[in-house]
Image 1: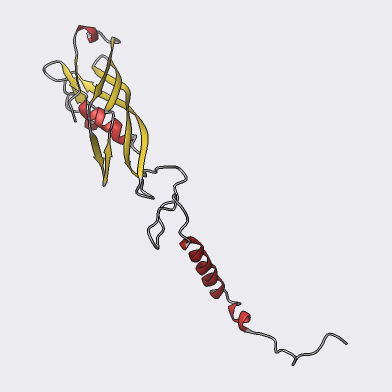
Image 2: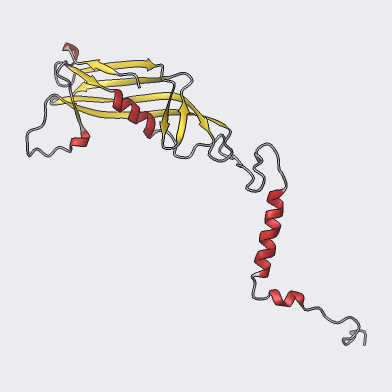
Length: 192
């Protein structure tokens, strides 16, 4: 990913001072787990840097239009991402023994910059859905023939339902009674 850096200058000199940082990255795509995603229009970020006294707090939104493949039907899927960014950059390393979790902060660079690249990337990844669907009601693929069920019914679903019903009836403790048939003409007549 292209680097995103912000200079910490006199605009952020005093605690409480804020600076808006916005921009656009012409990224092609990214990978998350086994999924490859494309960013046809890149991604945008709109952040607020605030001097919090002992460091810089970066908050804001990372947004993009993302395309990938549907997990049910394998067709094209598109969705919008609007991930929240929340990162803390300390001016100096905390003293030994201070109660600060190392994962909760980064450091302002010696060149008075903050590298926002990893925070932007994390915000994008965190808002990417775990299961990607082309449509909320996607029917997926037929497990028998592989046909895309969104394009039409191949008939295998009805056959599978009938087979399941037959198996359910056969598993019933009363299934043996279905095979019993009254003898024709050999029983008592109700015409008396």
